[in-house]
Length: 216
Image 1 (spheres, rainbow, N blue to C red):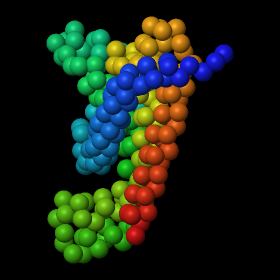
Image 2 (cartoon, rainbow, N blue to C red):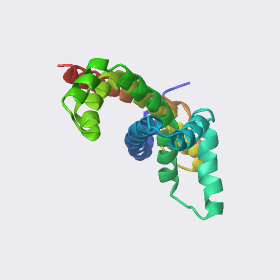
Image 3 (cartoon, rainbow, N blue to C red):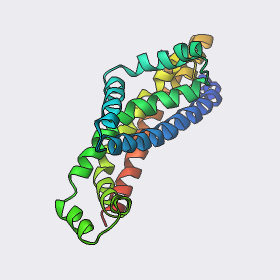
């Protein structure tokens, strides 16, 4: 077996297209999962069970079914109900929804780790409930959970190849298409393997820098 640099050169335009799609799915999926996870966490702390119960059902279902099943359901079943979205939009929503059920638990742990004295101090100062959350509790909770949230960013990155099953040509999809057309598998698959390692490493460096900044 010989390494074909011409194949690598021919693959690079396809790789760039797949890389942009992968990064877009990762960034948007991460933002959605972080936002929804926080919403789920706050709703689960609602005083009425008529709010907590539906949220609990939705999040348990999303957490305990495979992401692949959710992708197929959203892409192939929702159009039968009149809800049609692009493949990338569907993929981003599926990743964001699926991982929001995990980030929800991260936020919950972070909130519970805030010392009771902080709650008592906010009460003593007669701070409104919204002010207590936005100025006292959440800043401390989120600072504590940045490393755990970062781990899920890496997990989401490694799950982006699943989007290929709903016709999203991310990096693996582009490599697979190129390989089938050229009957050359080693070069494109090696390139995307290295790309995943580099992106994961760079993401971990950025998250460590963010963590150090937050703990100052």
